[in-house]
Image (cartoon, rainbow, N blue to C red; front, top):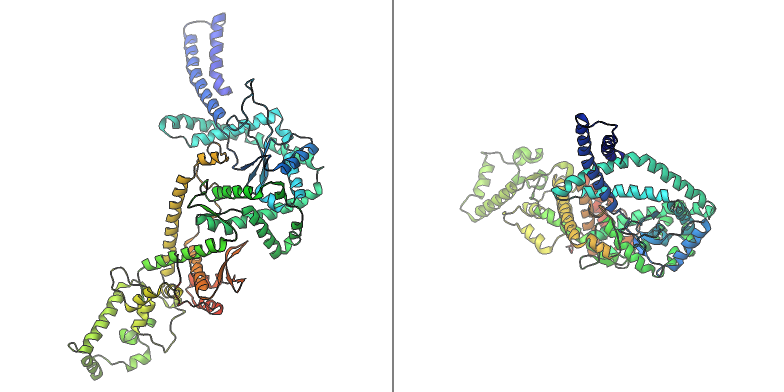
Length: 630
């Protein structure tokens, strides 16, 4: 502001000096006056532009679900009693967010604050208390009160005029940067780019001062709250760490697979209790935490906890996955009872179908020397014992063998046709298998016929005539044995399948993101009571992606696991299940089988199919049986 007013101040001094006679007229003084005016006018215009953008920009608000006093009178009563004990103003409202944190948020901006009164002024308003929704379901009432004590104590410093003005100024600068970053059109982009640079400069210059102020506010609030449930607050802080761990596992392992299929679990917060109870059962460090479940949970402070949980679950899907703002035919809720059948089983069959499509699109693998009969191999490739017994060219035995299959006879014609078909099929194949990936190859002294080799191979390349083995495989349907054999026999099949799976999954995710962007808009969020502010949702959803992109090998392992699970369900009487900490699970005889990962990785990484075949035999899976795909 001082830099913007400096040229205007110089111009005022020059003109005042001329009017009072202290500064002469004409010559260089007039030039100086006009130069000062020429600098002052653009500087004032630019300063007015920056001030107008900062004043009109809407500060970003944390996406949350508003909770009215009618829907949670006990919760409002608890917060007001807590504020009275601390001697601070009570929060103006309460909102829930799908996160393991709690804070105060200033929503007094003219775009989100209360309307002006009859005198043209807005009444001062306390900040809004934002509470993490998992806390209400996992914590007990006393623990929640102890946890919220230092947060509610912050309303005292927030009511100070200087602190409130400083916070509004900083949030206005942040909103101005967001507005400048999403400017469209050359007429708006150029001036807003200048505003963004000025706002960033001001933010950098006041960053240290703002940090010191916030630390002082936090220290004052913590000191004020020490007299309220201090001993219980230590226990509550332990529950915060446990709740965060369970919430993260629930989102990444359980909710994310459902979101990717167009379904959103409608009771995520209730699932936190099950996930943390399971964690306390497995982890010895969490022993005793489940005994707290006999006390009154904090969600009892809500009149309709199911409706609040549903709204928070939908917002979590919006934030962490970018789902639509409202349910629809392609974005429907799913309960925990229906999760195994409607999510787990469907996920496995969709991935198994995608794996078969990718394998079908690959060129057929070329069989190695171990898979071809001795008659089709050159003499140099035969073992020493076979070379000793094979007829040499030009000998009587070779002549007799040639006469037995001479052209013109029925047997000779059939043999020539079979030999030609095998040669064409071998020419069409493009990938060679190495002995390192042939754990399932026949042992020494065993021979396989050409028909068996063609039956076990993948379907021929496009344009090649189908073989009897291919027709039998198509007629019987997709089988796990064919998938395992293809990955184990082909040296490069694993890398090719992994790359093509990654490309296909990326394409499907881009298409789904485009559909979600068209269905869910910020206007729909505003209609649902979720406010974003400038520059928050417009930058793209999800705001907080849960997982980095999976590698091709990880995708191949997931798809192969899905194929194995489908075969186990269809042929061994297994069932899809839900593990609260690990997500989709395979249940055999009512118990979860968690030992499938190592055999699958052995085939994916090393091409060794024997561990997986042994696992299938132990469970009773019949890989040669057809599998039902999506």
